[in-house]
Image 1: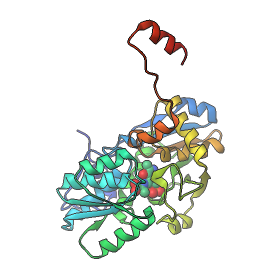
Image 2 (image 1 turned 30 degrees about the vertical axis):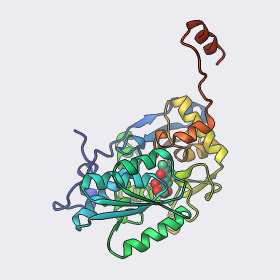
Image 3 (image 1 turned 60 degrees about the vertical axis):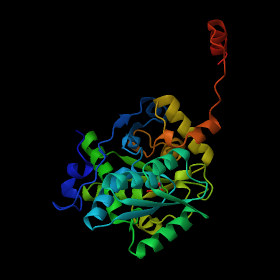
Image 4 (image 1 turned 90 degrees about the vertical axis):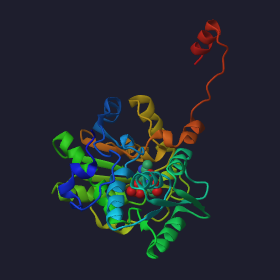
Length: 323
Ligand code: F0G
């Protein structure tokens, strides 16, 4: 049986014997070598494959802790604003816990796979007229009324859970890598990685990569104008890197074609930054945050449509040769 993240890291998490554990078998995700990209970039690249989490993104690490703690305090409902992954994760863990989830998402801006997840888990999904930032402000205001526990990464339990990715990486490599690279949306994950490193009393370069046009990026997961954790990120020893949509899409396609890993576009932001400025000779861990199946429309925009053929071997051979 998969060991729940909370059990694996119990001594480093704010849980006690009385905390009810809400788990879907999160964490303990693969750390994969990336031989082709490593050769191209002149680095030793490892990929922390977070889509292997139960809802398909790294959010489950924090959500298992946040929902367990909410349940411990007697909450009967959680609320979040989300570009989709936090929502899918909150909806899944709320369903598991037997409590309600209220999701506020920017109208028309959430990838179809993520929305399908939230709906199937029975969350109440509301589309807010406005941006993610508007939805987050509303979620915070509602949470203050005391009816719902906020499970955005402003909830410190989320960050506690997410720091465990660093523990796993260091465990598995047997040492701290030279560089960690993560995408930068609201900054919660960046702060978590810094926390994980500091709790291990280790140092490494931590590179957090944002979209050049935060308000309009194709990477909808990180379409956040005002990162909630901006000030904390600025106070930490973190390098901020900025990449264009074209660079994100190029890195995204390369990961799929060269390494056989299909992530969502935002997850490739870190790789895009590495491609621009590879730290040659360094051991680098890039965290791939979410699964490509969450955003099939993004793939349809860049990949060619399949040809339609008759079930005739000659026609198929001819069509295949033309590919
Ligand atoms: N990658 C993915 C796949 C995400 O969904 C997010 C954020 C990030 C990276 C950025 O992480 O915010 O901790 O800096 N998604 C949030 C959501 C905003 O609502 O699902 P961050």
